[in-house]
Amino acid sequence: LVLRGQAQLELGDTLRAMADLTKAIELSGTPREVTASAFASRADALVTLQNYDQAVSDCNEALKLSSCPLALAIRGEAKLLSCDCRGALEDCNAALAFEPFDPYTLAVRAEAQLCLGDVEEAIGDCDQALGLCHDLEYAVRVRDRACSKEQAP
Image (cartoon, rainbow, N blue to C red):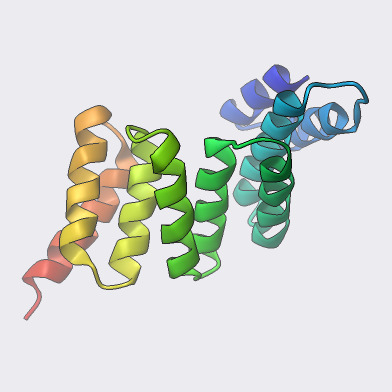
């Protein structure tokens, strides 16, 4: 159910993904890591649905079960989208301690840094993210915004 929910999320079928991931969470006897992954993936779906508070809650549940870098990264994104830039930066730093070469987490951290006024750090993270995944549009957009702020009078 977790893999199917993740696949549905990738295909843009957020509601079906939510249904499968919720079923996976409710199954008894599931290994903790699998349940944590289901919570983190459901949080990703909740971010897509702009339900940031519930996404943070699901990430917290995932982190109670396992040290899940995905949950940290998604919680960082949800916090960023809720205008908690400092919290987003902290979560992204924690996620990158586990998976230092995750391009999306680097891009989210870059946006949090930009939000906090750390333009050079934001550009550096975007450059690193784009070095890992050259067509990551999110990193391109954040880098463009950071560069325009850097050049502003």
